[in-house]
Each structure stands twice: as structure tokens, then as C-alpha cells.
Image (tube, rainbow, N blue to C red; front, side, top):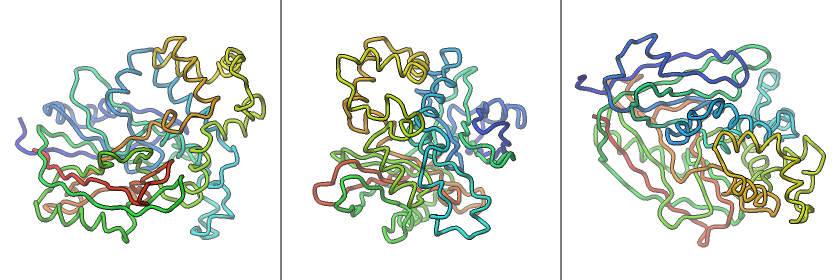
Length: 357
């Protein structure tokens, strides 16, 4: 058995805009059984519209034929391409040059589907015989050309905690808000690097987690672009079906107007969308009724978004041998999202550093 963690990198060229690649199989084809000797592995994506599902959810979806495809189709229908997203209005994107506006992908739908479906940039999978590990790309082709993707897989035996700290994050007075935790003014990344250096961690993981008692909020890793976060995501938090209604312009345009007694008709009208999710997750008819009812009576966003209370960041010395660093893609940022005002206009986040053995 290897005495140290092993990390490999894969380059992926998507075949279609939405593409699913079995990374475990790809590693086996290129590196043999190098990683199969480890009981677990950390899979990391360096992109904001491509990543992984947690193992528990992925395993559940994989038990049913086309379960994963139906699950992704559900969120693609809720966030249809070209549904009036501010992020896609390039003339409003002040951070882009004119040349960049010409090639920048219109992909707000992919960002929102990534966040809402619970896709993650960094996940740990335990080795299970024959179980695939899928790299899911929601925006793999731009302008007819495949986008080049990179993912790393880090095999290890055990994980030990070496440091834990709690930090305070100031929030605005707005009930719906998103905060870029990578912003240097918060000092979070600087503190993470200090912990990595102090404990000499070459390969490991940083976990950012909402402290106990912090509710009505979640964490994700994505692109912190102002229009995407402050407008498009905010719209979703107020009304999860807003962009689907914008695209369809039918009964869903005013879901609150549907009386409870017509819930059966509403379910029928949405069968194209919900039945795929029902099949993928093996939900009963009674649960389907509950889900549809939640949407039409304006339930909180937490019932819809699969946003989690924690996110993981890869620590690796792949590019700086012997010196661990937080490894992320250029546009990746951990983001704290709240859909109810914090009482003291602050929230607390726990930083945990672990080392892979």
C-alpha cells in the first residue's frame, strides 16, 4: 500500500454542453489501479459550472436507469437557457473588456443549476467496487467548441484534523444576500494559508462550515459575479420557479394564483419537469404532492436549493512541491448565501484544516 497520498490530474474535453464523464473509469484507463489501493479519494473540479455530486446522492441516482440524467434535466428545466438572466447581458458586465464580452459564455442557467442541484467542486468518495464517479459538466461547449476542463483526484488512507478556528463574517441588513468569502477584506484565505503553513500540511482539505445555530443560510463554491449573485440568484431565492415561468409564459407565470384545490392539475401541468425528478429519486405520489404544494404556496428557498452548510477546498502541493496551498480555479469562490436577515448582522463560519495520511 502506498505510504503517502497520491494525486493525479485529468484533462477532460466535453462532447456536449451538458456532459457526464466517469472519472474513475478514466483514471483506470490512464493510470491503471494507482488509486484503487486507497480506501477513499478527494475529487476536485476547478470550474464553476462543472463538478461532482456527493456520494450518497450519486449512489441513489445511479441505482435507477437514467436516474442521473432525469435529475439533471429537472434543474435544466427549472433554469432554461436564455431566460432573461442579468448575468448573460454582456453590456452590463463592467468587469469585462469589449473583447471579453465577445467570447464570454452566456451561462447563468448553468451556474444556477450547479448551485441548486447541489453540485460541489470538492467531494470525498469512499472506494466501492464497481461504483462510478461522475464529473458533471453543465456548460461544456461554448460557441460550438468544447471547453477544456481539469479535475484532480487525490487518493488517501485516513484524514486527521489538525486545526479549527471560528471567524465572524459581517452581513448586510438585506434579508437576501450573498457574501464572497474569498474577499481579502475578510482575511479568511490568508488565515487558511497561515494554518496550512503552521501545521505543514502538503495534502489535505479546508472545510468552511456554518457554525451551529446559523440557519436560513448556506454555502456554495461558484463564480462571484455581481449580477449573477445579487440579481439572478436573489431572484431564485425569492421565487425558485421565476426563470422557468419567464421561459414558459403559461400557468407557472403566476404560481401563487393557483388554488390548493387545483393542485392535481398543477402537478399534471408540470409532469414534464417533476416526473423526471420523481423517477430519479424514487419518490412516492404523496411526496410529489408535497413538493408541488411547497412550490405553489411560496415555500422558503431552502426546500428547493440543495445548498449545504459546508464546502471543502483542496489543499495540495501539486504546483508548489512541499508547500501546501488552497487549490482552486480562477473564478471559484466560496460564497455564503442567506435568505433571512442575520439577527446581529453577522454570521460565524468554522474553518477546519485536515491532513491526508
